[in-house]
Amino acid sequence: MTEDARTAGLRARVAALMSQAKSDLAQLVSFRSVADPRQFPPEECDLAAQWVADAFAAAGLTKIGLHETQDGSTAVVASRQAPEGAPTVLLYCHYDVQPPMDEGAWRTPPWELTERDGRWYGRGSADCKGNIVMHLTALRALPDLPVGVTLVAEGSEEQGSGGLERFVEANPDLLRADAIVIGDCGNFAAGVPTLTETLRGNVNVVVTIETLAGPLHSGMFGGPAPDALAALIQVLASLRDERGNTTIAGVPGDQVWPGVQYPSEQFHADAAVLRGVELTGDGTVADMLWARPALTVLGIDAPPVVGSAAAVPSIARARLNLRIPPGTDPAQAYRALVAHLDAHTPWHAEVTIELEGMGAPFRSRTGGPAHVAMEAALSTSYGRPATTQGQGGSIPLCNVFAATYPDAEIMLLGVEEPKCLIHAPNESVDPKEIEHMALAEALFLATYAG
Image (cartoon, rainbow, N blue to C red; front, side, top):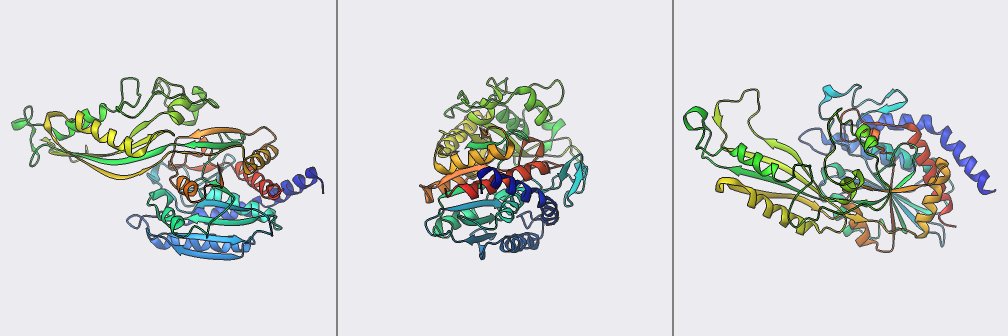
C-alpha cells in the first residue's frame, strides 16, 4: 500500500468514526467529574474513570488498570505491548474538569453536549475530554498498531494536586515510553496544526493582611484606623506597572518570544476583550503570553457589596497566581514574590503568605524522530505545514516525565484552540479539530516505527 493510499484510508476511517466520537464525548461530558468532593460527588469521577478504562479496552488496549494515586484520585492506565523491536508511545489525557463556574452564564447546559453553530458545547468538551476522544478515535482507526501504546488518563489535573506526578515517580516502568504525546494543548487557531514547545511554570500563594483585632465603625474610627482591604489593594496594585507589566524584582520581565507571533487583533477576538479596552504590557502578545511572567489575582476574600456594613475591614486575603516562563526557577520566583509582598505591605500591617504550590516551566526537545514523524502527520492531516507555539499555562507533569524518562521525546498537542474557552463558561470544541487531530495521531502511530 502506498503512503497516499494509507493516508486516504485512515482519513476515511476517521471521518466514519466521527458520529461515534460525538456519542463518546456526550457521555463523557455528562459525568460531572470535578475532582473536588466539596463541590461534586466523587462518584462522578469514578464513573468517568471506569468509562475511559472500558472504552480503551474496547479500542484494543489489552492491559487495563485503575490505580489510586497519592491524592486519592484514580489514574487509568491501559496498554498494548509493542511488537518486537518497535517503540512505545505514551498517550496522556485527563478526565477531570473544571467546575462550570456561573451556570447562568452558559448558553447551553454545561453537562449536556450541545451542538450549536457547528461547535460542540459542554464542560470538558475540549479540556480535556475532547482529547480523550481524539486518542480513542485515532486508536479505533488503526486497529493494527505497529507500535506499543500506553494510555494514561489522570483524575485530578485541574486541581493540581500532584497525584499522577507522584505515581509516575513511584512506578516508572509502568509508563515508560520512547515518545510521549501530551493531549492537553491545542492549535494556535482552528485549522492551524501546532506543536506547543514551551509551558510557563507557576507559583500560587495566598496573602493575608491583618490590621485590627476586629472591624470598626467607619464613622467613629475611619481615617486613622488602618484598613486591611485598602492595604491589600495597595499591595496588589504594586505587582503591575501602569502599562500592565508584571513587576517583581528578581523575576525577569523583558524576554522576547522568538517564534510565531500572535497578532493583537486576533488576540482581541480570541480573548473577547471589550471594545476600546487596551491589551496590557509593553511587549508583543507572544512576548507577554509565552516569554514573560504574569501575575493574576485569582480571588479576594473581602466583605461583599451586598450585606456590607459601614465598618473598617480588619482582615483581607487574596489568592495569587504567578506564571513564569522557561528559564525562571520557581523557588527563586517564590522568594522574589514573598520579598515583594513584604516590602510593599503598608503601615507595618501583619502579612502572612501561604504557598499553595509551584511548578517549573517546561521546554520540549525538538528534531528527534518522533517530532519529525508528528510534524509530518500534522501537516498531512491539515494539508498545511505545522507550526509551533508557546503556551501560557502550566503542566507540571511534563517535568516529571522529562526527569523520569530523559530519553523520551515529549510532544504537546490537542484540540484546545482559543475559541474553545477552556475553564470558562460556554466551553466548546470544533469537531473538525477532533477529526484532524485524531487523523494526525493515527498517521503518527502508523509511521513512527518506520
